[in-house]
Image (cartoon, rainbow, N blue to C red):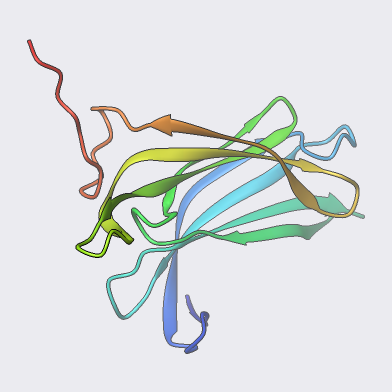
Length: 149
């Protein structure tokens, strides 16, 4: 499927990477959480997270969220936990340059775990936690720290 997205409206393709169901709106039925990868002409790999519910037997989009690219707020995981949508995004490693300004590298050693709840009209962030990546993460931009034997 080709769509136009982003600032420059370059054509892109979407690839389904995940679909989950979970109760997010406290209406007694599960919502669908769909994750799509945006494949653009360049090297960027952002994702779209869409939340749908059923309204009068028809799908109704409640929310759409676009992630960043790889280590720069790229998607780690999406889940539904205890009635909340949980979106985990990679955080880039930041180091000082010669002028002591912090510069983000194209690698990550941690991610943020963002919790979103439905208020009847929209999803809003309720909490953010920061967590380190682990050795089982196989993404090439993840810094895997080995411990000494």
